[in-house]
Length: 104
Image (cartoon, rainbow, N blue to C red; front, side):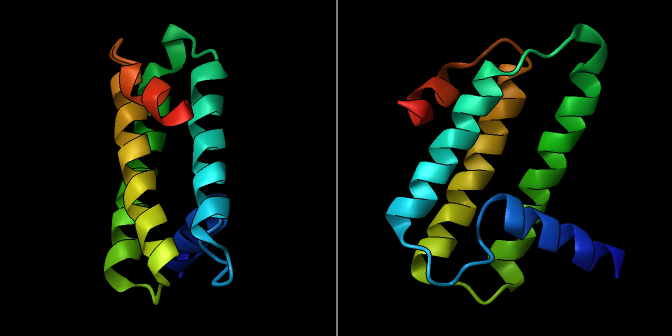
């Protein structure tokens, strides 16, 4: 049950819980996520926690892509969301460029 609640939370955070969402709407939300990650200051004390959070979201998005009933735009957004989370993890290692590209 807990796993299901976590996946539901991720579905909502990435707006994958709306089968009527268009790719344009989902892409705009993904861009907002990337911009917010770039704009959020992360203190050195929290790097490990943030890395774990991004990794869990990436894992959840992979699970959603495998198991959920998705529209084509939702499937594309789940894959792109996973890539954004990978880029967020790299940002924590001092490599923000992939997030910059998504945010443009």
